[in-house]
Amino acid sequence: MIYDFITIGSGAAGLFCNVNLPKSSKKLILEKNKILWTKVLMSGGERANLTNIDIEPTKDYFSYNKKATIWFFRRFFNYDIIDFFESNWVKTVIEDRWRVITASGHARDLVKVLENNIIKNNTQILTEKDIISVEKEWEIYICKTETEEFKTKNLIIAVGWKSYPQVGTVWFGYKIAKQFWINVISPYKGLVWITTKQDLSKFSWSSIFCKIKISKNDKLIYEEYWPLLFTHWWVSGPIIYNTVLAVWQENNCKEKKDYSDFKLEIEFNLENTTKKIKKELNLSEENLTLELDIQELKSWKEAKVTWWGINTNELTKYLESKKHPGLFFIGEVVDITWKTWWFNLQWAWTSAYCCSEKF
Image (cartoon, rainbow, N blue to C red; front, side, top):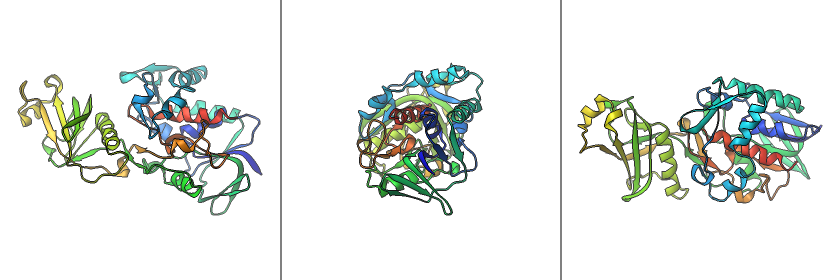
């Protein structure tokens, strides 16, 4: 059998794309893992984070091609995905920082909607299918496991990168792009903790709201007020994840081992700082800051997303390869990266929809 569409990956992007593809077409989703939609269920600690109501594409998303975010989000945005789920009887509410979650608080509600719509749209799903190679013969793509092969006219790559290895993400998308001579901006770990040269064990596991300032050669490049978590040798929390993106962007997409020209400054608010921290740092109205030196960024194992990816200049407005018609890339594999606080799923929904628009 030759399918009209084969999608590799059953994350939010892969699932939502198949909800929108033509019902009359022959569709197949191939998933490496035994369990489907793992990342959807994990989003927000299973709290059913859907999107964010306050998104500025050029501010909250990053890409080598800065105009790319505008092109895609104009066609399918946060209100569109909210309307989709609410039309399927899933009520939503807005929480802090404008994040949108299901009123029930259960991620399973999102999964049920996606699953029901995929079934209605006549999509077949096969799990535990580890694709080890992809070949192209004329206009047909052949996906091979160790024992089987699946043929399709259109191949949609909807897998993650190396981040979140505990859910089986791999370098598969990178491998396929390189195989077909598609330019990839070297991926790097994003939304990850920062290890410091200072010993922070005196207030380890203390969580506070504070302002973070990151400077390079004494030039301020980013600041934000948000929760921060101290551990023995590193700092974590949403504010740190976003700070890492600022550091990586300042390095012009290049990995850096020496961060000596960066300074991380924490500005405390006495009203919400723990007594333990106040005492250890001798904080007062005249002394509200702590300066830290960056040692390194934590490993891929802790990374929440992958920074950079398939160059959007290589793709059409449908996220189809300009060099190889019928080959699509959606979701995290594309060079669109986001801040934390539930901007990730919105890119999954948007890229999936933009891909399906062609058909």
